[in-house]
Image 1 (cartoon, one colour):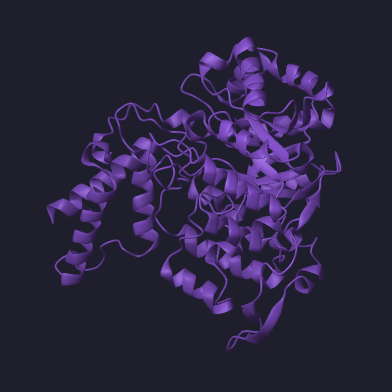
Image 2 (tube, rainbow, N blue to C red):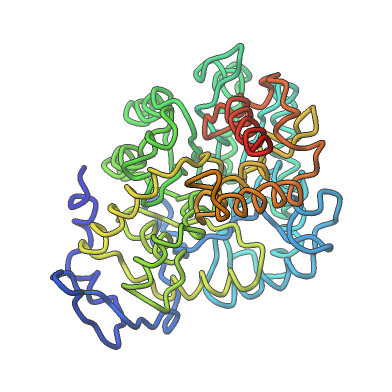
Length: 466
């Protein structure tokens, strides 16, 4: 499917949905450029789940990066308790402004996300929201039948409910040093009979929708849809990573990634509702290089950069909800505005974003979404923070460049090295990676983490020698 096919579902509604005060044309360009936009002036946009009739808010709350009492998230303060009062306030705001889909997991926030989410949601009528959680049996110790069942039962208890609206087989498609993706899937869900047991729980009303989230091997993705076609298993929904970069360029970011256009097309033609994760590509589409930000601001000066990505992710037909992990109230307010109502991406805007995506993939960044699945590192490295610091320096144009003897280069070199030491304690820096490869099987983006760490360390050491 090309970009025009992607947008065929929009028609004239895309233009009609825009609230525009004034518009003009850029010099030498016939594409209209919106100069002033009012967002957040209406009600939340909803999508209907064809399987159940659920009226689901197009913005879903990802409960992966909850605030902690010391400020920020667990990445900033690993031993800080969840700030339950703030979580309650944010969920209250979300519900009051039309959000009703809350996505969590037994492994999020070091196992504390479901508990905090359950406390916050239980203060509201059960029929006012939908709970999505996952069977996150990644560890081999949870592959046996009883352990996997116990994980599901614990989710119900932590979430203070007797049924799950949307239950996912968590992050299928991964592999380990010993098992390929199909063998891993069989070990987690088939050999122990858990998938069939989950179907039984659905038939008993304890699960309303059964699906999976996908990262990795497209052969396993195709197998899952073949089972759906054959009637072996019915997938009520599927969660995929999609944004305007991954649509055509996921494989450019990481060769083993699957383009979102393929995943979406295969699901949509079967009528399977799609849940979107990583609409901001791990936050990278909210922290773009200055020259790209300038292009976006020329079109809509008052529009936050991240809003382009959120609008894109919500535009296609068949998207049930777009997940956003919102730690701070200001992010929640901004995202609610984006989808109240959603301004669908026009064909002209789509062409523009594809050009932006092409420029973005030329940057030499690490495709890390800071999901923290690779943590903890047995040797103490703070892998996501290392990658995040490096990526921000690249995307913000702060890498030393040009003549190494020039004063500007030396100043940029000094800023980089000082910033590296300030953000990452010396014992947690890339130089301490021994290449044990334990992180590899946990990365849903299929990043060769040791290779990237060694590349960054080589770069740091090169700067130190100058």
